[in-house]
Image 1 (cartoon, rainbow, N blue to C red):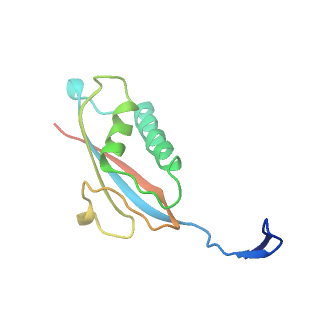
Image 2 (image 1 turned 30 degrees about the horizontal axis):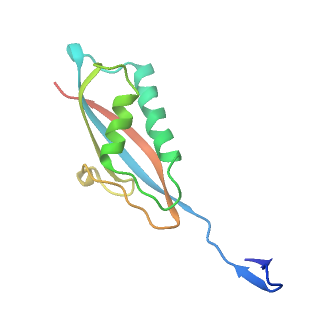
Length: 122
């Protein structure tokens, strides 16, 4: 708690709660040109792009699935990936919980990517 002086000579108590990370797992399914898997550099670029997107979000603001997909596609050269979809789940849940959902968080939470998996579709 902080006590601050107000403009009219009084004081005001400010209380806050530290934000907490909510872990999510991401599963990216994609089809690529020439049916080749993403190489290590491309995987790293996608991971960095998703992390950057999530880091840019203010505390308490979620992210839509379409923003995550866009982040995946923009990390790679045009035409490298023909289709992409992203399924997400809370890290504490089993694999059957993966779904193409938007991520929402409470006012004092932020999204932390615990794992990012890639699945090439043929």
